[in-house]
Each structure stands twice: as C-alpha cells, then as structure tokens.
Length: 253
Image (cartoon, rainbow, N blue to C red):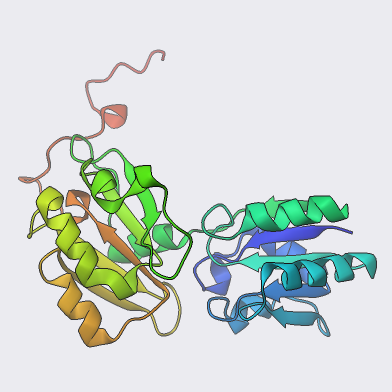
C-alpha cells in the first residue's frame, strides 16, 4: 500500500488534477488539514472512507495514522493544501515514512499563489519589469527563517514577492518593503482563493495594511507585491516577450 501526498489546490474541487481525483477515489483513508481543505474536495473520497483532520495533530501522530493505514492494507491520501512542494512538511513526513518502510509518492496541485494571480488577472513575470518570483513567508510563532532570507534581503531584488503565512504581520511587512518597492507599489491580498468566502483586496504598500486589518484577516491569505501587479496599458507596457515577437526568426532555435 502507498501513502499518496496529494496537492489539494487552493480549495475549489474542480481545480484538483485528474490524477489527484483518481487517487482520492481509491484511497480509503484520507488525512487532511481542516483549516484549508474543503468538503467539496473530500467528496472525492470513496463512501465510508476514514477521514482524519490533522490540524490538531503533531507529526508523530500524523505518521502513526499513515503507518497504521498502510499496515491495514489501505492506500492513504495525505492531502496538502495548495501544492506539496510549499510549506507542507513533506520532507519531515516522508523521512518518517522511509524509516517505517512505508512507500509514498507525490502528486502536485495548483499552488495558492497561482490561483491568487489568476483571480486578480495578473502575470507575475512581465518582460523587462519582473522576471523573478520570490515565494517566502513571515516568521512569528513558527520555524526560524534562515539568516540569508530576511525580508529586507529578498525585497532588495524588487522581484515579484509572494508571501504565505504572513497576513497577521501585514503592517510590519509593509514598513519593511517601503524602502525597496515604494509606497505606491501595488499589492494584492487574496483570502481563501477559489473558495465560497474568497476575498480580494487590492491596494498599495502604503494602503494594504489598513484594508487587511479592516477585513479582520487572520489566516489562509496570500500576499503578492511588485510592479508586475500594476494593470498594463499599451502606453505603460515596458516591453513584450521576445518569444512571441513579430520580427523573431522561427526557423530554428
């Protein structure tokens, strides 16, 4: 039997991959974080499946559930919000499964930042304006950030920045971003992207903290910062992609 780490996407059940749905259909045990994974996603599990909400379990308890299901002869779906490659504790869980001799695999999902960008209708990489996207988080009561990855160090690049797990520190973050992005740099915050209670806030480094605090956001939000989020007009467009340029020769590479 196998433990399947499955990207549950941002929330909407129709954003699951075909592979994810197939694995959910055949896994009679499913572990999920109730804070993020919706009932519509869980509806893909077979009738009578054992559903385990992990939001109050530690890693050892989660591992015990996975190993127990494996030894009982069940495939297990371990749902991860968004994509398992980001902030999913995948490395810790798979190390424990390796030690227990339990096989596992990974199925990617739609990451929350991609869903958020789609909702606001923005490309995060714009020719000659932003060609790098930084995915990071803030630190509060959480694992320490590496010394080389302070917010100011990353902000100095002026790349498009996407912050996870940071919404409760929006005002402090904005203050740190001002010297690098400026007060008028656009910011978008998407809370519970693709879910029924989705909320989108759009402002600037100067104004976004007021909006976040007024909305009372405390979790499940993605923050996107950078010039690429500014609405494009023919006069404001810095450049267009060389890949699709009219005068580009397409006879070879």
